[in-house]
Length: 290
Image (cartoon, rainbow, N blue to C red):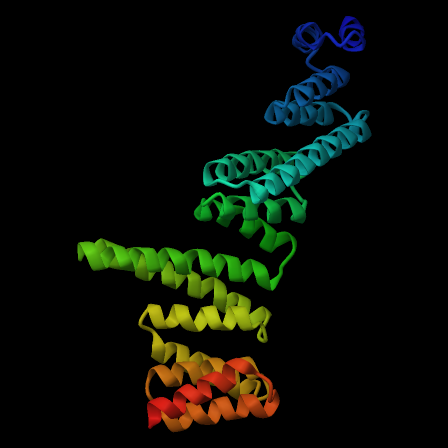
């Protein structure tokens, strides 16, 4: 009762003190834990907020609706705060300010995920904030969660790009150091990129971004033969898929198999006469072929 009075007076420290005594004396106080969780939410301590909400729900479902409303409120508050900070970062004129705002946006979206752990939009924005903050590897976790909640081609493109870029960085490092471990790290990163992109290719066989990144990852991983087999199989399974035709042609171009690659680019153009990439690479084929 005294805690409720302190809350009405907006004296949250005193209210929390009273509630601490309450739950200590009465461990089955569902209302005590609910109000304690509410106060922690107002303080921005979301770990403690959820901990106390969960304790209240374990005792009874009496405050379930109020707990749901409170969680949604804090999710919306942090989500909107994250969006505002993200937009500020995008408009910032210097890199230092950009980084500062992106880092704050990350924190806000992280809090939002704690309040509503099944919001796909939150994980998507969190991943974008990490990527824009230059923390690409930290973006992997929210992207994997997003893959569970809302499977889209973009998730696979982002995951593939993160590990492809990591592989390129490790490969460049190897060029300087000649250290075996750098070469191994590069191949491991390319293999991880390939595994995500192959999964994406099976779900979205006509996504050109996935296919192009996949063929590039195979090439960087020195697995051109494997890539050729994969895209050849794709062409055989879906002969009217212009993206399979094009990517198979690009791989053949890298192997100087001119007659075969020209055929693939021509087939792609039969499917789509305005497919610019195929037009360009057919011209490149003729130039290299002489």
